[in-house]
Length: 168
Image (cartoon, rainbow, N blue to C red; front, side, top):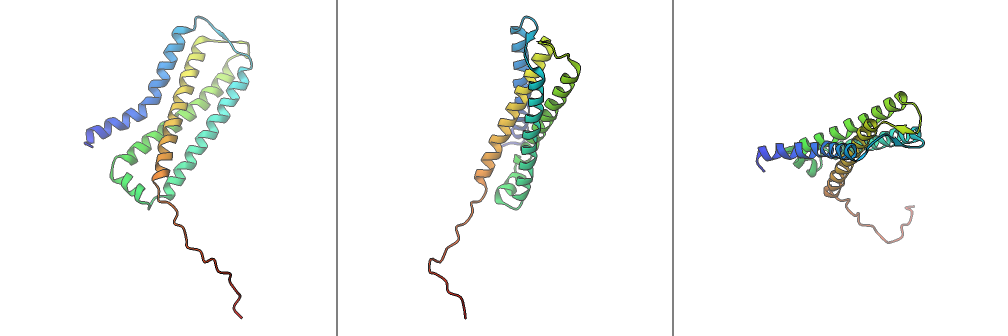
């Protein structure tokens, strides 16, 4: 694959979650006419912080798993091609969006009064941000699972089925 196509591929995979989030934001903004009534918004914000922190932790853990596969043939092949750059973009996008979801939820929870009506702008931005994060998480997870599938399989050790006897 030419270097120009590799660079385009990296930015497409990294930019796809942002594009999805912007589309969701505009679709909601155009379809919602006024403030939306949501009960227990503080519960939704707390849940989004918990979920984003947990999934971001899983992403960080998967990085250490990939580092453990450092001498594997698949990791060597990734370093030689553009795969390592694509992984860096995917993981960076996911981590940035995860921290942004946490920050958005915390700031929104601290700044809005816990009434039943949520301003249209906050709702649309939040939905777009959450959809961006979820799509980034799904893309990163899919790539990680494909990499794990390409990792060398464990070799079956031959077992001796004869009973052993202690040496005297």
